Image (cartoon, rainbow, N blue to C red; front, side, top):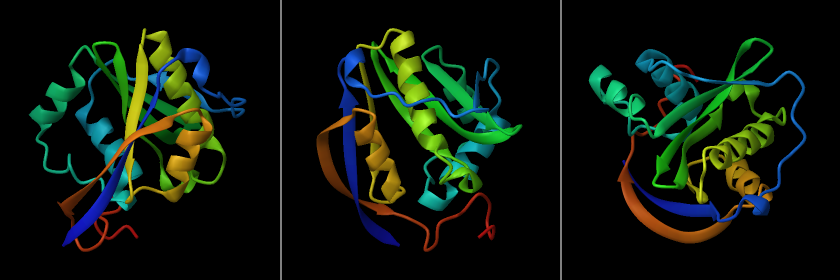
Length: 178
């Protein structure tokens, strides 16, 4: 089906403009230091399946390896109570660091982990020398997403509408999971 989607672009231009939160007890963050297409695809589908993240579903193993092995790419995974809770991917674009993907696994939503994970993504972006941190979200994402971005200090710098082709229902973490 074709759907009209609003895309919102947000940014933080200075390191002192963001609002970190108190870390959640027990939330551990680890960077993936070895490219693992299987694990990144798991994270992508588990986090994004309910929000129509479909762009990478057709990627081959080689496509994943090419993306993950770029020196400007980083994947960070949050663990809570021993299981993956969410993740983010950073993409350094000559000092402008994009939080390219960000989110929580469905069973972790509503526990306050998203605020902490976003704070850590922003902090990591500045640590690697960002001149600006940016991301985009869209009207398909959770309504809480943009509220979290704004509360952490992001400001909107552009919005646009695009007509996109989507499946009739969100794919979920795997077909039939919901």
